[in-house]
Amino acid sequence: MNFTTDHFCPQVFGLAVAALLGFAMFRILHPFLGATLWAFLPAFLLAPVTQALHRALRGRRGLAEVLLTLGVILLVSREVGQNQRMAAGLVSWPVSLPGPAG
Image (cartoon, helix red, strand yellow):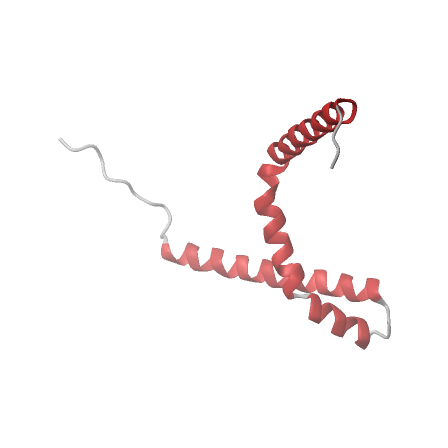
């Protein structure tokens, strides 16, 4: 390739600016990467269920997605409720703490 000074400096400057903007964007989005990956996992795993619901509801994709969303919410809230009841059964209230040694 034939690089001349007229084209080389703007290209290097553009590449440096793009790298800095990419780094800044990564720094801004870094706190959200974990949540994004955890959101991607169930979406990926539930895609066949969504497609099956879509076919079963004769092409009503919105209804299929609403039903799946409600089902996941009910499942998660049921599990959380069971865990809270189990944790409450492990602890007898009121809890008495030992006094200071001495």
